Image 1 (spheres, one colour):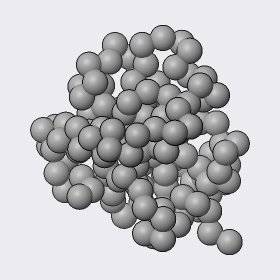
Image 2 (cartoon, helix red, strand yellow; image 1 turned 120 degrees about the vertical axis):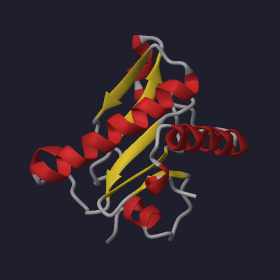
Image 3 (cartoon, one colour; image 1 turned 60 degrees about the vertical axis):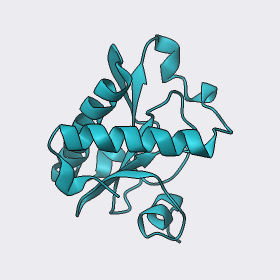
Length: 141
């Protein structure tokens, strides 16, 4: 059975994408710890990060760094968080989020009921920053 992330990638479930390429996508999480909290996900279903092909893992990290730069600028964050938890969905995903304090790294504090309009605005803001940074070819519409 396809993971929930594969269903989002395939368009079976809606997602707020900010990045798409042939190997990796990035979209907002539905349970953000801060505004700008994204997931970077390979299209290929891989459960454990330590078993992913090193070339694909490198691509995931490159995309995480690229979207992280856009998020940092969009939200004027002093730091960016990067986290692999892997317990929620059996499909490799990297959390990328603006961080102002160490508590931001606690996924248990995530908003369980964010405002959909606010999430849409956050996605638009990140897409705009990605375009400003020259990544128009991969910005999801």
